[in-house]
Structure formats: C-alpha cells, structure tokens
Length: 123
Image (tube, rainbow, N blue to C red; front, top):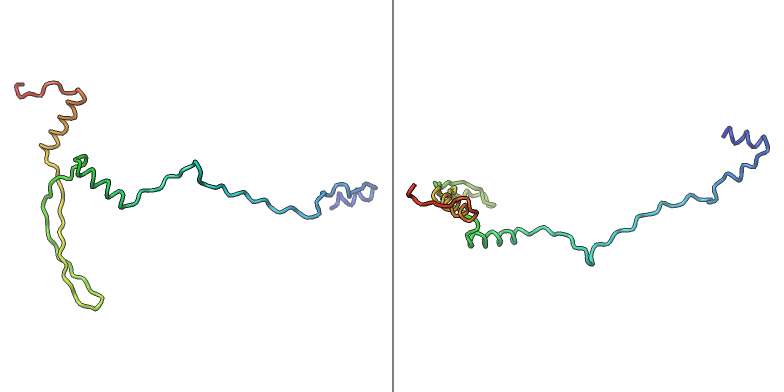
C-alpha cells in the first residue's frame, strides 16, 4: 500500500496494474475419468470360486491333503437364546503327508528334470 500511495503522489496511473477480471475465477474441477470400454480392471475372486478351484486341484491330485493324524474330540458348553445350556462336540485333528509318499514324488520330479539317471537298488 505504501508503494501505491507513493506512485499516486508522483503522478503514475495505478489503474493499469489492476487485473482485467473483476471477480476472481472459480477453481476448475478435474473431469472424472471413466472406466470401461477396452480397459478392464481386475476383480478379486470370490471365496466360492477359490473353494471350487481348491476342490478341483485336490481331486486332480495337484494338492495333497495327507492323512488325518491324532483326532481329538472336545466338548463345549454354549448358551442358547432362551438361556439353556447346550453341549456341542467338535473334533480337532491334524494332517500329515507320509515321508515315503514325499520321497516317491521327489524322485519322480527329479527323474523328469534329469537330475537322477539310475535309481536302482544295485548300488
């Protein structure tokens, strides 16, 4: 403001330094980008689809579940909505793949790759 007053006193036309617009412009918004057409976006698989592919791979023998080991049955008491106690039994067990099966599969894979040439018992 001090400079403006100084210029006015010295006879300088200060109006030529004003901006041309009377009002300040509104901010411009970015246009929303549309998705579709030839562009595809990946969609996560549903749990039902994952479950179905797992069942197929287990049935084909691609995945091995092993044998059930040490099943143990537990009881738990739960409270119903009407306030009565209810006994529920559930079984917890683990799975184990036998070592002989693992060794046979590894031997077959190594023979396919050419790592093992002779696996006879003569040696």
